Image (tube, rainbow, N blue to C red; front, side, top):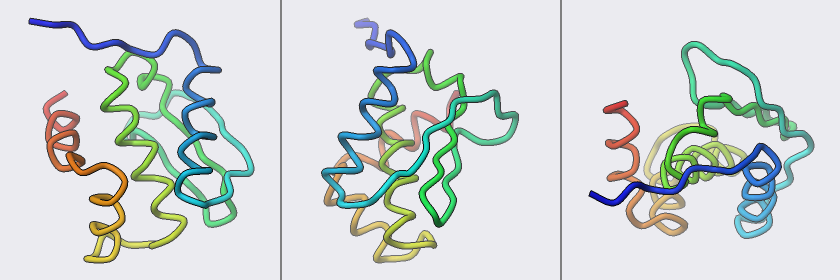
Amino acid sequence: MKTEKAWDNPMDLKGAVWQWAERIGVEVREIHLREMRRKWASISTNGRLTLNTELLHLPEALTEFVIVHELVHLLVPNHGKLFKGYMTAYLPDWEDRQERLKML
């Protein structure tokens, strides 16, 4: 079984956020990493993104799902059809990644 690559350091993870924000067309004002007990990440309406430090140890594909999920919330605040449409547009396999993340 192939081991998936995890992030090398926090700056690489933050770099991925900036790249995705540009691609999606949203503005991220701050990126913070901290231990979070119940969530993988959260984002405020003004663009403050907080990522769980555990994401540094997960495969990049799963972390990428978390990043895109949070950034799409800057476009759509809920998990309705429009949200899912954006997720599919940016990460066609997002549902598979979500299921993998839930199994951790």
